[in-house]
Length: 129
Ligand SMILES: [Zn+2]
Image (tube, rainbow, N blue to C red; front, side, top):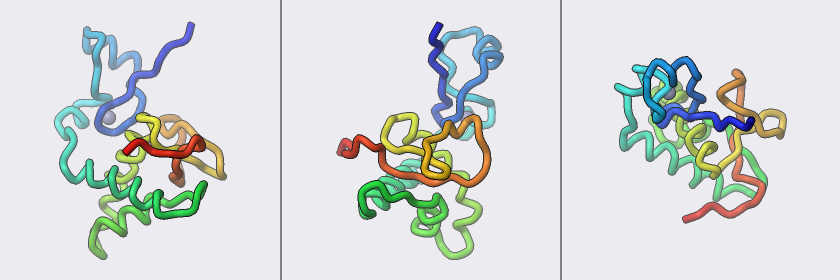
């Protein structure tokens, strides 16, 4: 049977079944208490927007490194500590079907893999405005 993976609203990672049972509800929006209390901020939405903006300025099919987004958004010394914010934004955009997260040119499931990733617009092209 096909089971749709539930996705954390904040970090964009899959939510474990145990977590879903523990909640005693069907609608689990967060993968952890950390994500629940963190929530989403204006800066998180800006990170999503920066990813899309940067990709739309690149050639069709081109990919970017999340660090390019962090460098574009944050000052010299801050971008490294903001990398996870950018990765979270990338996962949310991927789950929303707007971008692909790739490694070696192939789409990956970011909940299940670690290591360097790149971002690109979806193959089917246009992003909804
Ligand atoms: Zn989460």
